[in-house]
Amino acid sequence: MAFTTDTETDKSQSQTVRALLAIRELILEGLLAPGKRISELSVAERTGISRTPIRAALQRLETEGLVETIPSGGFAVKSFSQQDVFDAIEIRGALEGLAARLAAERGSAARLGPLQACLEELDVVVEQATTEEGFSAYVAANARFHALILDLAESPTLKRQMEKAVALPFASPSGFVMAQAVLPESHRILLVAQDQHRCVVEAIANREGARAQSIMQEHARLAGRNLRVALRHEKALERVPGGTLIRTVK
Image (cartoon, rainbow, N blue to C red; front, side, top):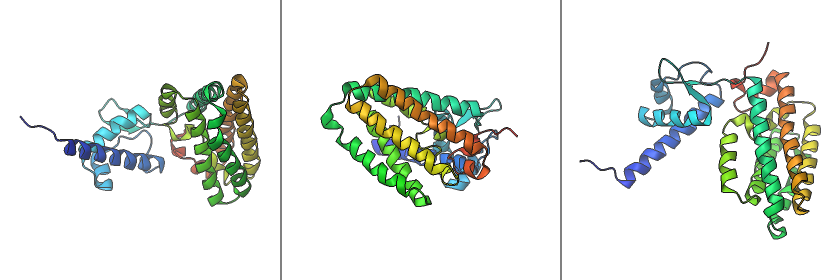
């Protein structure tokens, strides 16, 4: 009877993660078209990864919602209606609102330092967000801001649900930020977002749970506004991770 060693198991998991990242990148770059069956052989040839970890990666991507099983067998890249995207943003907003409320109710003033420091960093970054590099810096700082609020909520259960909610790239807090880089109204939208950041930190510091929840839910809806704008500008939609998966109405 053959036994699998820990080393072999670790190697297998590493290959699956590598395949997962490679396939996700192919999907988000539009190199695997929505609705078409994914050829494991073709992906193996592109990535240099064997078919077994590719198959395991596709199964994991199905749980993330990026691919779906098809009647003929195998997997196809999933496409999304505009309503699907709005729903995903609304779900993320509901969870982030809950995180903000719990942060206000459970967090201590002593733990607010990193969040306030991140807010101050964002103040500087927003003013510099007029270039590609500036918007990239905003994406990083914005992601950290949202993660810090989730940490302050002190809820592993909520964190797991949030990971599922943002598995779709356009549902993440920064999903439409890079699209703003090519839009004339981009800086005005960033200023609104930053004002909401400041208000939610104030609400958390003052232990105003209901206010923090409401602000964070409204903050998430900015992504919906950005989506509507991006859908009117082809170049902007091209900057959205996974934008090729969104079905546009002609």
